[in-house]
Amino acid sequence: MSLVTEARQIMAEADLVVSEEAVKAAYDKMAAEITAKLADRDPLFICVMNGGLVTTSEVTQRLSFPSQIDYCHATRYRDDTVGDETLEWRAMPQRSLEGRVVVVVDDILDEGVTLAAIIQSCKLQGAAEIYSAVLANKLHDRKIDKAIVGDFVGMDVEDRFIFGCGMDYKGYWRNLPAIYAIKGK
Image (cartoon, rainbow, N blue to C red; front, top):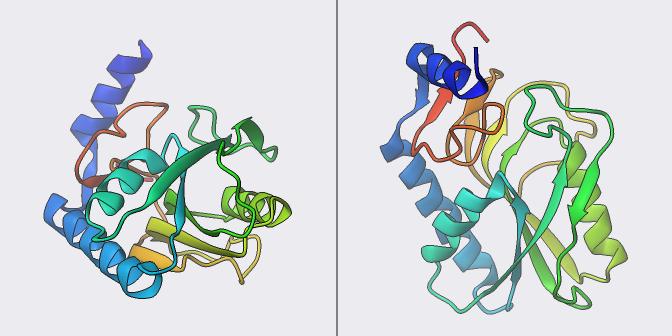
């Protein structure tokens, strides 16, 4: 079976976990919280590719203040369903982080390995303050550090393999406007 056929089959059997309307409400909530806290701080938003692309776009379009956006690409999954222990850096932000208020935006906070490494990198690059914004916070006890939390969180999600809204199944289905889970996982 080809990978695209497998992805179609997974979607055909998937469970809807979070509706499109609930996802939009989560983006609204995140944008309102970010605006209340950072509107006058000139934050630099760093999109964590590829998963954070959708959340970054949706949230920043809802902001009522001028903002700058950059990106980084750090991954443990490499289009697989299981994360590797080693974080692979594919791209670093192009803008200087020195003295900046930075908001790292990603799709999901799962174990926190990627987010912790990106936050550490931002600190080493001289960011004055670092916040994290994630659409989904996965509820489980496997976080690498209990101190790793999202500062701006759209929603909590159950501990299942989920996709949509930037999260993928083997590189597919990031484009879905709602969040789904693999049947039985």
